[in-house]
Image 1 (cartoon, rainbow, N blue to C red):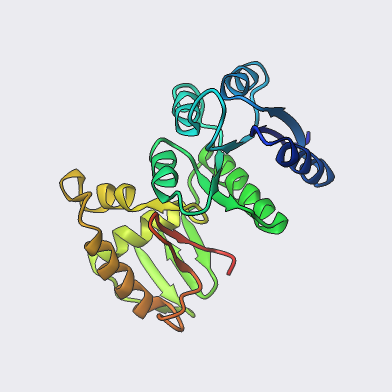
Image 2: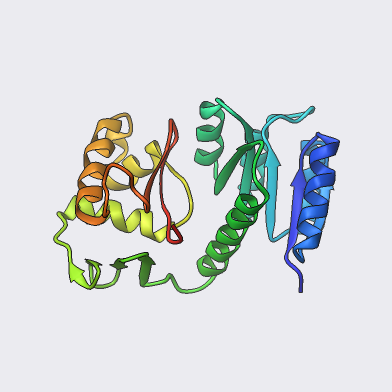
Length: 229
């Protein structure tokens, strides 16, 4: 069966474009122009993925995201205007899986959808014990990271950080989410920890740490591990 995508956006041209693009790529599409309408549709016809605009006429997109998360773990990709990093972080912290900045490319949108659907399918079953990102292999069960077949020695904190990124490969993780998971809630404001440890991981794992292919920075928001770079 074709995956069902619910698009919640109040711009008619965006709705038309997304319906055309997604239908052409074998997705079944439902559309809503208001947050309340989107929530009703999501309850009546549960989608496999939601594409959610942050600016809606009746409620904030973050509120829609928060309400959805009260009863469903469906992947949510947020659409955001440029320079609204605070909104992106709020949405991600409320349960969104990813975001795209308007205007966005068709291929990038489709790639993000594939990643979100894949992650959703994996979450419903057993977690993947081994994640591969180019020459980097992260074995979560054995606590081993290799590059080009050679084991890379990581500290306990470096491995915990890498494992968290790998377990959510392809998804953007906010600074606060990473800090809370790796260091604990008392340190969620210490973003300097992340800069240091991400820098160390890049030196150990990237061919060119100054131009990383896999450990990607999402400016003002957080980091993600790309498996297809």
